[in-house]
Image 1 (cartoon, rainbow, N blue to C red):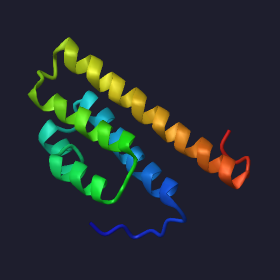
Image 2 (image 1 turned 60 degrees about the horizontal axis):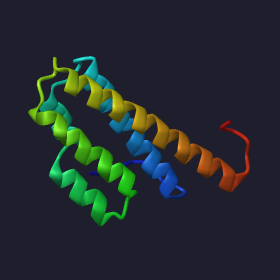
Image 3 (image 1 turned 90 degrees about the vertical axis):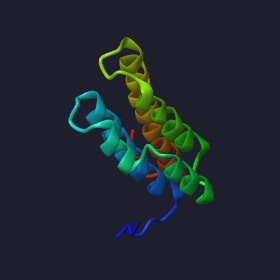
Image 4 (image 1 turned 180 degrees about the vertical axis):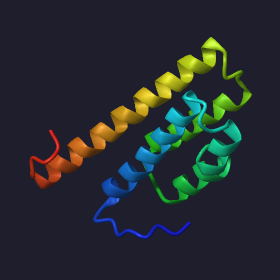
Length: 112
């Protein structure tokens, strides 16, 4: 994977990943993509392994692993809807926390 952006720190990179992962979960919920497509983007054991090798946040790896549970669920089931909603909520919280922590480090006041 080639990412044509330089990152000042791990927060930038992780936040970019979280934003994309959130988009994948929302797209699954809205039936814009199939699970197979989501699997080719993020929801795979290989992705989790790569993220572990990169020493990314355990919370991000957990999101990926929990997202893989969707594979065996009927997308019309209540169980699927509850899990996808929780994954979306958790992704948003992690993004918010990354920006809050990063903003505190810089003390810029850009993100409130």
